Structure formats: structure tokens, C-alpha cells
Image (tube, rainbow, N blue to C red):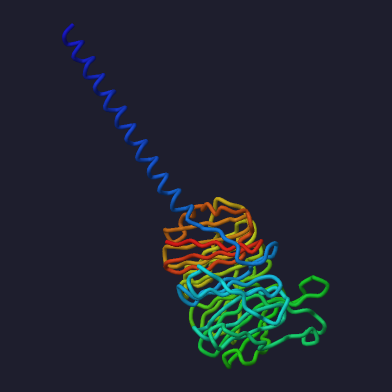
Length: 339
């Protein structure tokens, strides 16, 4: 009898310790979940654009100076990291599709069929080039994305359309720092949406129908790469001349580790159309898209976690650096995430 009571006491003690351990584990898990929630809820939403109008582009030259731009020729600048914004004057009522600076002073805007430029750090913007329909046999050009592959050499991609139907690709280049632009041939006739360069020689273009174009000679020639998808691709980002990402329709994410010779799909926890991707390091990357979608990876894209964006507005553009993330979208929305 004494042995039985001793065994029973030991069992009660063991159950007590197990219950205590479980309680501590649950508390730790709750604390971890709270910390995770705090990390993923770090996006602060404000409106700096026009109500019921889209913001299509965001770009920063450093941690303090940046621009947002969108519908009806809207452009706004901050000089204090987004604490305040001041609207700027640009002579267009077209939607501005892209903002890009090739250094602290010289930058460009794309609006409709026009390129605007600044040489004074964005204090003033002036028309640089215009491409009327007569240049394209009556087709209407639309300019989407601009990037430079060196001090003087730059590229713009877009499309030519008739009656709102895309009829041809559009590729422009400059060899004089953007003072003048000319058309260049490409091996496709679809809408080209975004361009990125890893260095002076190697660049990529993505667009409709899963199109991926690649150059290894600074844009002198472009060849088509096999994407193995028909989904429209809206954005491409390369960390170096081998590792890159492309995102697009229906939650499409493609990754390459050999400069685009092979692209393979990445499975994500969303099906929303994805509109922009950017990595701040080899491990840390972000994706934004329709319906307020924000995804984050901290392991070089092996896994992606959905973030709490606090909005259902479409997010059209993303800019990231080591300290801040910026995303812009519908209804003049600006999201900021400070690490």
C-alpha cells in the first residue's frame, strides 16, 4: 500500500510539472506570436496622393529624398523621409508610370508618350522627348519603365496600341544620358512592362504572355528566354547577373539562379496578381500586388510569408532600402515600413 501511494504521488507530481511546462510553452508561443504580429503589422498607411486616383511609382535617392507619382500627372516629393510631402508641377495630365534617378541630380518621369527630366535633383521637371502616333504609323505609344545601364546609356520599355489593343512592343534607348532617345528592335510584338539591369551589360525585360527578354551586350541585342508561363509578368529584379525574380498574374513568381537560362516557379500562399518585387539583400525580399497583398522572405525566397498590409487597395509599386520600405497604390495610398 505504501508503495502504491508513493507511485501515485510521483505521478501527480509528474502531471503537475507537465501542466506547468505546457503552460510555459503556451505563454512563450503567445509571446512569439505577438512579436511576429508586431513585426508583420509594421506598415503605416497614409494618403499623400489624390483621392480615388492611383499612385503608380515610388523612388528614393537616399533615406530622406523621394518621389511618388501617379494619375493626372501627380508628382510629390519628400525631403525628410516621408514626414511631409510637397506636390510638384509637371506639364502633363497623363498618368505617370515610372520615376527613376540615375544619380542624385538627374532623374526621369514617364507619362503617356512623353519623357520628363530633371537635372537639379527634382526641383524642376521639363519635357525631354515626346513620341507622337505618327512615329508609329498612327499607333499610340505608352511608356512604362525606365532604367540606365551606365552613365550615358538608358532604356525605356512600353507598347504601341490601336483602339486600346496592343499591336507592338516599344523599346527606346539613349546614349547621351537621356538628352535624346531612339527606337530599338526587339524579337517580340507584345506589351513590354518593366526593365532591369544587373550591370552595364546584362539586362532583362518582362511583359505580356510570360515574355522575358535578355541582353548580354548592354542592349545592342535582345533575345527571348523561356519562362514556361503565359501569365503577364509585371516586374523583374536581379541581385546580380545570375540571381533574379519575376512576378505577375495569378500569384506567378519565377526565380532564376543562372541569369535566366532557366526560370522555375515558386509556390506562394496567394493567387493575387503580383506587381512589384525587390530584394534588399541576398536573403531579404518583398513583393506587393493587388488587394493589398504584401509578401516577405528572409531566406532568399525559399519561403514567403504574407504580411498584414492594413489595406485592400491594389499596391502598384515598391521601393526598399536597408531601413525603409515604401509601397504605393490605389486611392492615393502610401504605405511605409520602418525596420
